[in-house]
Image (tube, rainbow, N blue to C red):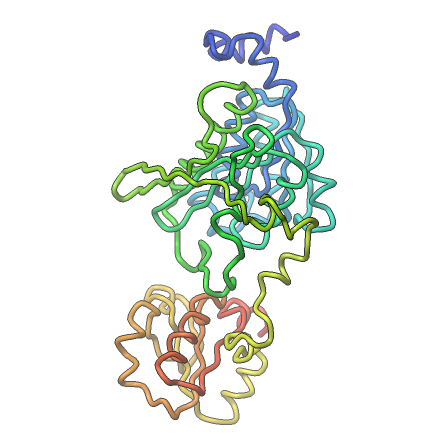
Length: 371
């Protein structure tokens, strides 16, 4: 059943009555697919590989960026610019060569989700955007697969398990978030920041839940939403009941197949932030032809690193208290790092009676990339 090397490697597991040789064999015969080899995926992959999961699938299409390194511990400075899959494979294969690593170099979509996820026992959500989060939820409900969910924001994290196949009373993600919000109103790590250690804590908890599901031990977080506050160093828990009117797992589901979630989560043409977006080329032309008020809504340290010439710094957090000093009749263009904060700023100014406002699509990153 196990080689001499495996007996030695997993000896501390084998000493646990709740695991033992039978449990370790369950781990060896199990398969887990981790979607995302970033902040959450890094610790989860390390611990699942170390635990001896027989088959680990990794789905990722991104490359390693220097800004990843304070939290994405699978990757190191020499990996900058490499595909995350290659970096992950190298580290995990060196750590435990007994684990079969299956690399899916793609973005999860409505076209490939069933094909990729269907081959695994458990799915672990290591994503950072709502389009993929809803897609994974719906796919797992339709495939009757357990989904170990985790998310992080600044100093806070969340973990739960959705598994209606194991427990018919289990809710799914849509039971409490039926539809996704417009993505421009939700900051990601690049926009809001995140404490580097936080995904290590949440990703490790996700790995623990996956191991419990495979081993059939303990009390999985099914129907229980665990919240972690790093600043207060406090865990709390709320109960999430199954919603009988849930559009995907309710009594009369309306979501019976996967859809194009990127399109579903993107504001339509009626959205004010969509109407009032400027491409970098359009902003350049605007700056060359007339006088506008260009506002950088990032933080001072970001502005000091790089900014668009002639822009005025008013961080998003202080914008509301500065609106009285702005001329509502003047043409205003807002920008941030990638478009999330400037979209929020646009909504704020619109609510305060400013109608001649636009924001830079893709932020300063797009500005310099399209120079």
